[in-house]
Amino acid sequence: MSKVILITGASSGIGNSMAVYLQQQGYTAYGTSRRAMPDGAVKMLKMDITNETEIVQGVKQVIENEGHIDVLVNNAGLGTAGALEETPLSDIEQVFATNVMGVVRLTQEVLPYMRKQQSGKIINIGSIGGVMGLPYRATYCASKFAIDGLTEALRMEVAPFGIQVCSVLPGDVRTGINEHRLTATNDTSIYKESFDRTHQIMNDDVMQGIAPEMVAKKIHKLIKKRHISGKYLVGKPLQKFTVFLKRNIPNLVFEQVIKMYYKV
Image (tube, rainbow, N blue to C red; front, side):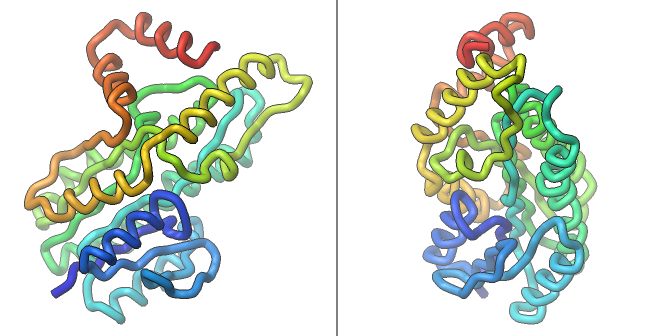
């Protein structure tokens, strides 16, 4: 029987690459999008993960069609950039509604089915920015820190039911996130000169990032693994090495490294 995979944020970027690749590997992949989309390589569901009604209806549809959900990949997310002081609270609320509460709501909806079948995997797509604070990405980093903590706690809670949980932390990936990122800045900002330098580095890093197919292949390996650990890094060697530095050098030294890199 083909495993059924539910992947949020599958209209483009990492989510689309995952859905298409997993379908090619013989899985039954369902992708979600905030807008109604025709089925193509994968089955698409209209599901805004900030909309509880659409979450309930989407999960119900998969269960009615397939009878089970074997893997949930919480991938949908919203990027932000800007000085925290100048970021509108409405933007911050939107980021947490998508990046955190959306994950919580959908996970709560899927878990009863996984408990009943005594198996399942939940893979949360976090970020390297979820293990270190990055300048002008305070809101985004905070949301991904939250997902990292949520994942660690949930792993222990659901393990007795045969459910495994992990987070995958990509570095920069070549997607359209630069175009869709919420950006808080203005020409009179006291932060403008510093932000503009850092923002350009952010954008350049994304353009030079790994291909989204690399993340898709990592997810495939995790689906096939009998037992998964709690956390996996995916990215260029230098970015993965940065996580090692974060864990092994004094905080003040690491902070200086980050400030120098981003020209803050």
